[in-house]
Image (tube, rainbow, N blue to C red; front, side, top):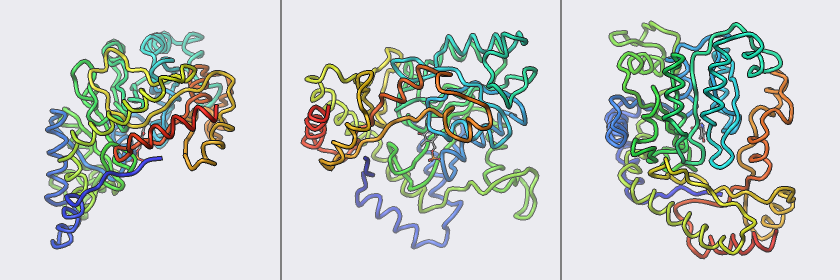
Length: 384
Ligand SMILES: *Cc1c(COP(=O)(O)O)cnc(C)c1O
């Protein structure tokens, strides 16, 4: 489905770390953080050992605790909701825009207003069980789906009106821009991820950006076993974690950051090939780029099959030709433990479910050739 894009620069960078005694918390981590701070213009960049860990620290920084509510969407990777559950907070799902798959800002505004007014109006946004109608809405966790920023201007207006912290899950959107503003910097905190299928990789890894000095200090402490500035190795001011990124991973990430423009351009080129070779297949819906997206950072290439088509059959026929494809995303609210805990049912979030049922991620990476993209499209036409 994807492949990392590595050169001798990355190999040499990792090798060089092995010639030093410092394998964690050293110059590579600082340089990697600096590179992303420069890219985004954020005051603080905090490297962690996964995107999920980064999102979890943002949930802590936002002050979410047991029973607190956060607006988010069920059309995402599981981790964006799990990080709320880690703190016993409750995701309040709102459905997504059909074209982009990003959170629908009008629904988010309506949900925030209804939750503030309480009673029956609030109840209709809450899950059937597992949430209290009198709980406080404290945050909005938006996801930049498939490398495209959500529609932040109206979302930030809602957040301001209701005093919500905004967490930006930019794990799929490193390098993207919304109205010329860098993805990751649109809310109070933004998080990038570096699993091997992302735009750049560290093996495993993630990074938080924020302009909030106090939150940055707090999250730096939490990633390092709760050691506040001035704490010794065995002093722990807070309940923390080992969410540190190691130096080998940071060196890899730093070398990849040196190639970011090249990598994003190569991904854009592959997306263009797909768009061209899919032109002859009008029944296939291609990815939609909103006008507010001033730079797309292609993470995956997800097309939508026509309503009622046999996606499993299409996938099987493609697999038989050696072409892997995947459903993407599977709706979060229908995952077994979410159903058990909150009582969700099929039909609760129709747009998410429709996108989930028809979406098909095609093989995608910066190392693909035009011949491969063309072969995927030919096979897809046959399979349909
Ligand atoms: C990749 C991803 C994450 C988490 O990343 P990990 O580094 O695998 O923990 C979170 N949210 C979204 C939307 C992602 O795509």
